[in-house]
Image (tube, rainbow, N blue to C red):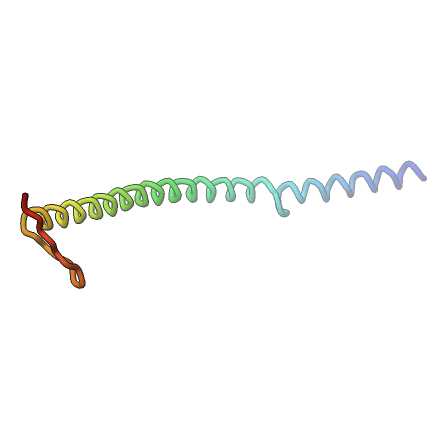
Length: 91
């Protein structure tokens, strides 16, 4: 009788573990779904990183471009900012 109880208990535990494998948290379908979502998120992250790099390059180009325009305007046209004093020394 004692071995019969142990056998029934082991079968019940096996059924519980098997049910967890197919329907519980961490089940095969759940893991597959999480893997699919991870793949999608990784692709979205890569796209966002590429967009960020492109935007950073555009901002850098705009800043450098504006600095070059301002420098040219100062040298060639004598541009002065508000509250600045322009002093020209001739040799």
